[in-house]
Image (cartoon, rainbow, N blue to C red):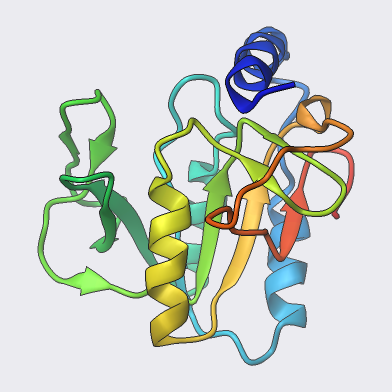
Length: 180
């Protein structure tokens, strides 16, 4: 099945998932990060839209534990960068309707929480098709070692994803039921 058709199918499934019963436990993510001792304390998250896993509670808890938080800001040419963010600061809604932090200083996160449309057992990620995360991951790994954690509901898993040379694998995928 082509990526376009897979996206459509999985987005429909994701829309029907009961979000109140399917939350990702902060401690699952925290344990993963603690296990990766060499990784720093800057966490890149995202503002959830279109029925994505809500990572805001996770980010709030990390902020309380002294981690720096940053969110992506979408730019031209399918590009984006991460900027510092605190839950005390207001967000600006971009042209896609996604809240973003105000552009201050670009930050290079050590850990990125990444939303997914779908995934497979080989840690491949299916996104919306714009390549934003593949590009930012490529850019970040040129600068430093990063930890890529995909967040999804277990029902978003498919047997095998068609992948291209530009697609970036996750280091981990965390769902409400298990960790890959």
